[in-house]
Image (spheres, rainbow, N blue to C red):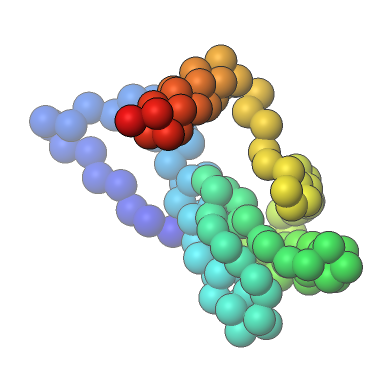
Length: 125
């Protein structure tokens, strides 16, 4: 895991100090997951905080999900002396669908309105 240093000039936030080891080990698990996913030719498209985004044809998705979960859980066991952090697949989106924002729905809709206005403006200009 990472190390953190506090000095006289840098005061520790107690909650951040308690959370730091968890985040540190989480980043290590994610790093090892990415390395092993690459070795196992898993189609990782991006990391999303403490998760990975995979893209695969619909017919391959169950196998890709199963293999990705196994890699993540094995990575956690490797770094945490045998303790396996449970992983799960969620938020499956199939083309042409997209993720629908939960918290930022109003913001998303305002951005989409602006983009639509720009498209309309360009067509008439």
